[in-house]
Length: 183
Image 1 (cartoon, helix red, strand yellow):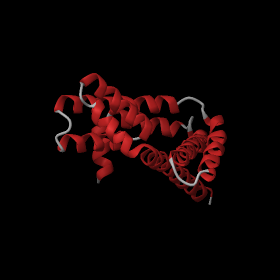
Image 2 (spheres, helix red, strand yellow):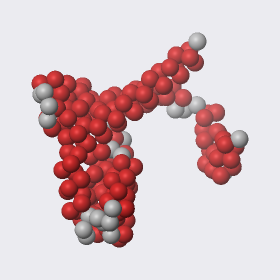
Image 3 (tube, rainbow, N blue to C red):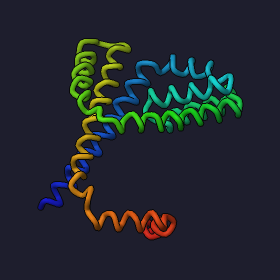
Image 4 (spheres, rainbow, N blue to C red):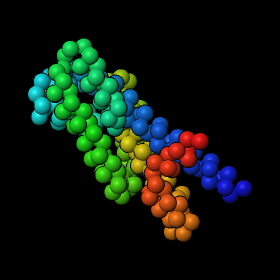
C-alpha cells in the first residue's frame, strides 16, 4: 500500500511541476507575447544580440523549446538569417542551463511569497500584463514547491545501495541501457 501512495505522490508532484511550467509559459506569453515577438525580431539582427535574446527568451519562458520554435518561425519567414538564428538557439540552450542552476539552490522559502504575490496580482487585476505576471509568479511558486516535494519524496532512497549499483551500471553502458529500455 505504501508503494501506491509513493507513486501517487510522485505523479501529483510531477503534475504540479508541469502545471507550474505551463503557468509561467502562458503568463509570459500573455503578458509580453506580441512585444516579445517584436523585440526578438529586432534582437536577432546580429550574433551577439541574438545570443542574449535567446538566453532572455528562454529564461522568461522557462523553455528552450518554445524559444526555439519562435526563432525557427522567424527563420522560416525569412526574418532571421542562419547565423543569428543559430546564435539565438545557442543562447536558448545556455538560458536553460542557467535556469537549472538557479533552481538547484534552496529557493523553496520563496515559494509561498511568490504564490501569495501572484494570486494577489492575478485576482486584483481584471486584465492586462500585471494579471499575467501574477500567473508567472504563481507558476514559479508551484515549480519551487513541486521540486522541493520531489526531493523530499526521494530522499529516503538517496543512500540506497541497490540504487547506486543500478545507476553505476547504467552510467557504464548508456547505449545498452537505452536499447534495453526500448525493448
